[in-house]
Length: 147
Ligand SMILES: [Zn+2]
Image 1 (cartoon, rainbow, N blue to C red):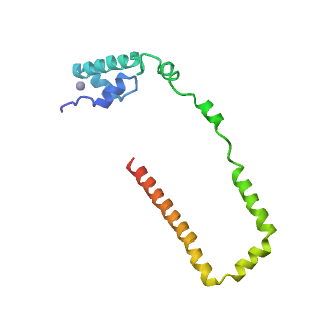
Image 2: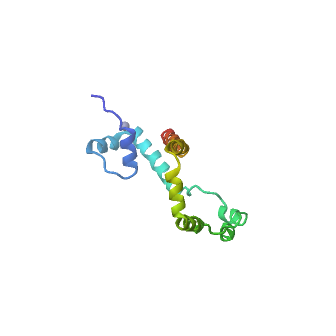
Image 3: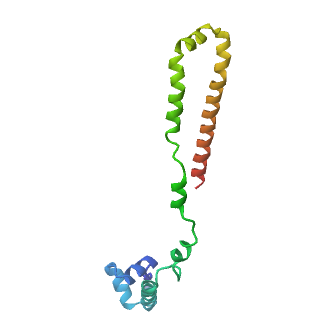
C-alpha cells in the first residue's frame, strides 16, 4: 500500500502548532519530503510574524492637516434661517385672520368650474415630485446592487 504525503492544510496546521492526527504524525516521523515542507512553512510563518505592518513611512496627517481649509470658521459665519418659515407663516396668518370674511366670500363666490382647473397645477406638481423621488430611489437601489 502506497502511503500518501500530508495535504497542504495538514502541513500548515502542523507548522503553526495545531495538533494533527496520529497517522499524520507517524508519516512526518519518516518522510523527508513532508518535514522539509513543514520547515519551509515554519520559516514563512516566522517571517510573517516579523514583517512590520503595512503603512507609509511618514506621518500623512501632519502633512495634510495644515493644508486643509478650516471648516469651523466657515460654519460660524453662516446665518441661521431656521426661524424664517415660522416668521413667514405668522406674517401670512395675520392678514388671513384679519380679513377672513373677505377670503371666505372670495372662495364661496368663485365658481367651482374655475377652482378645479387651478387645483390641477399643484396636483400635477406633487405627482411629478413623487415620480422624481421614486426614480431617485430606484437609481440609489441600482447603485447599491452594483456594489
Ligand atoms: Zn510525506
